[in-house]
Length: 229
Image (tube, rainbow, N blue to C red):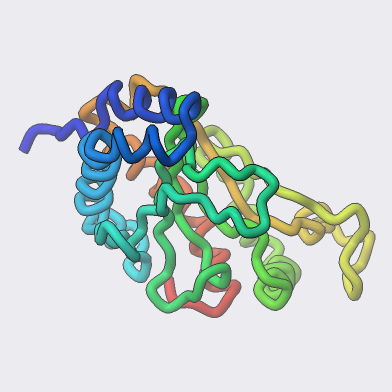
């Protein structure tokens, strides 16, 4: 079967216009366009990614349901935000562990907007008990952790980012050789795609390739929080 193209330039053009017209009237007038150019391509991408993800990480799931699945809603949560624009200006999806609750499991992530096309892996702002499990795993398995984050293919493709504490967390040796990693509040790594790559028939392969490269990192985090890999 020849490679399939999921996303066209119109995908990005929709969000460019939405960013200039982020209001309900404009969106309602362009709802069919959103469904045709954004939601349906994302659903097809997630559906075709699902069996590929199973081969990379068997307990992780890509759910193509339009509501309640892996694709994030375009409607923003305005309850605690100063920004009252009602719609996200990106399309995003998260692929988590089948046995992990929200925030308690690492995830594969993808977000595409006019500004960037980003693939992320790991854990963003995990809850304190989950974060503590990862820190303890780093202390218990320092050689394995150094191998994971120092692997050449991983370093070539990913940047490890996220927030850190200014001081070592309580109970940890400030002189520990991995203290800078122990101080992390996020365990995330990210990489970028070009718009041309997203719109090419090879994009699913490209995304799967970066997920494969991240597998040792994801496995360490998955097992650290007590989930099956």
